[in-house]
Image (cartoon, rainbow, N blue to C red; front, top):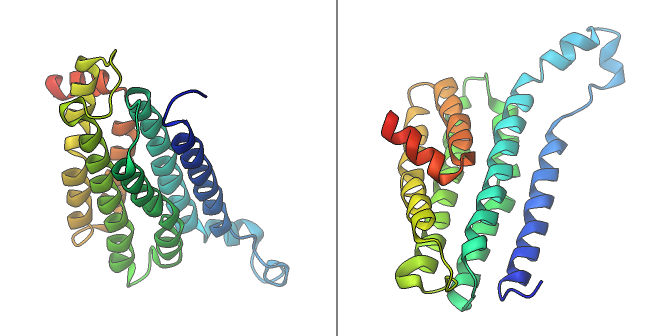
Length: 206
């Protein structure tokens, strides 16, 4: 790896891998003492909040890793500010298992609204940091390579510009309907998985 950002990317990949692996810890195996009283299938079904939380957070971290890779295909140089912004992003990534655990334990209960707010609020903060990192790197071509594809960079910038607002909408929706806010969060993860030029085309057609 001869890129100036190679160490940043390698370190980031490790953080993403650890964070996404920790999510599985919320998928519990029913205790054997409970199996005699309630069918195993019932006990497994009762854990549906953990499955929902796991799938959304797995998609979020995985797709954010994809986008992180896309960004650093264009970012060729690094400075102290970029490294600090990247660390702030990774701090958000490592925090994801915590709101995921909160949601998995409280989804479907009387206090699931607060759990959804914490869950979606984490994504709002990460989306903001993600945007700040990218905009810092591309401002006047500050950290881009000489062969930068300006059209692709413009598509990425436009796609990500809506991230914080859309996740904020998901956060606000949690006050009204928790299920709808989680569905929107999952939909946003899928949207940001699309290549920037495809997302831009869908936006124009919509």
